[in-house]
Amino acid sequence: MFLKKDNFLMGLLMGLLAPALGILVFKWVKFKMFSLGETLQFMYLEPGYKTLTVALSLSLLLNLVLFTLYINNQKDKTAKGIFATTLVYGLFVLIIKTFF
Image 1 (cartoon, one colour):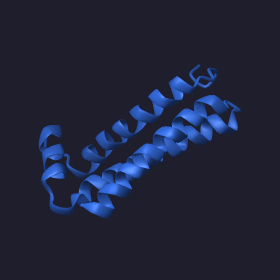
Image 2 (cartoon, rainbow, N blue to C red):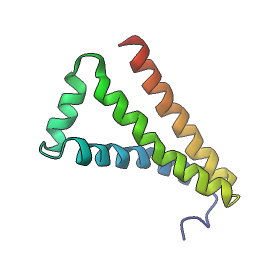
Image 3 (cartoon, rainbow, N blue to C red):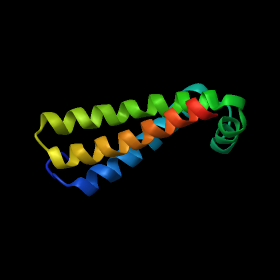
Image 4 (cartoon, rainbow, N blue to C red):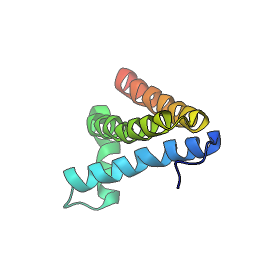
């Protein structure tokens, strides 16, 4: 049902939410014994932000899946929204890895 709509704003929203879901999956797989707050605190306080950048990079794979689905279904406006948020997330990860 959600594949039938072709809307840039919906693509932006999905592109923002998918990496958040990816971070939750990463937390569940890698840090099962800790709470979400403890995990996020560790990611923020860790020198070099290695775990944070790994989590963000892996979470972008969900955007890749969504982008591929929408491109294959010729829903270009939605795919553009997903791609735009992927670029922002990717730039954020690049800045963290480069300058911190």
